[in-house]
Image (tube, rainbow, N blue to C red; front, side, top):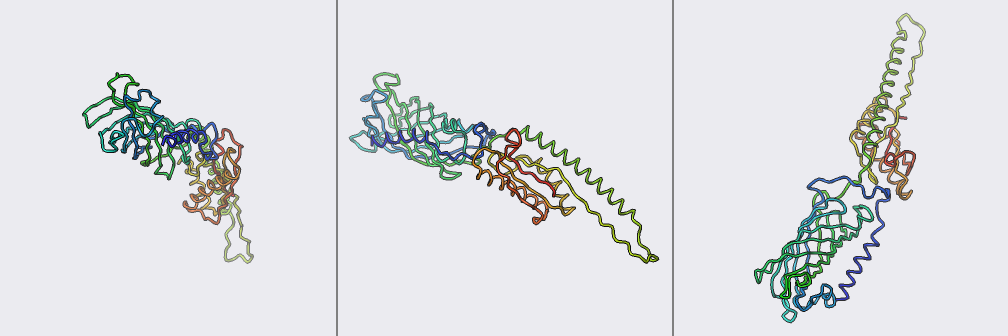
Length: 384
């Protein structure tokens, strides 16, 4: 068992350094740590574990001496359970309240001895997100923690304060559930030798269980929203001006048609009908996206799309939708992302009433034509 414990510790530390390279391929290095703030009811989690506990008392006063015999214990060992409720304030920092309960007997007595529980408030630090940036698809996260709370010996009706340290390892199973392996330490009751930290009983535990992520449990990568909004406003103004010019030109052409002489019964010759060809030219409208995503950031962008869609419907015009991504990440992934963005806008045009046969979708892949990089995460719509 001692070898098993040491292997778990080594695996936790080494796998933390080897955490997956599956970050979103379109997240620029400078933006991996920039996320939007969350609401109070977001990013909560509930954990439930089975635990193996060992208590070390006066016979092992050193804080590190118990590791020579873990998890058999010099004095007590036994099974228990723990429950925790917490919230991630950011992808790196979180808080949780954790309650452990267990029953332990002396080594020569087996299970079925004294009953205990502890309640701790703990600060969690996700070091994987701290050093590698947030990634909701990451499989392995290494999360050390520290806290303080209350210890209760129910058999002897005794309370004491405790400190807690531990290493929480989470393994993503689905968007809602993660498995976890936890190595925990609590300072226990003061022994008869004194009241210092070395004089307290030492409680160690290995815990295995599940974490349920409640409600909305991911984070949105933040973008330079002010710059994106400014660009959108400029393009909206350009579109409005273009629409005004198009309406004025249509009115002029209609006046020419109305001025043509109307045929009468006395007329014996046939005058060919005047055919008016209208070339509708529109400034491209941009719809912006979050990094690595294909959903629209601002509803304001869709106002421009609606205006352009109505013009396309009225004039039975063809529409060109071009998707783009920034240059970060692999070219193949950028190509697929730009296609998803263009298709998402094309689907919106169809929903607005544009004939799908009149829509052409083009995936331009990753580009760096605009500065900053946020401007390149877009799709453009224009009439052909």
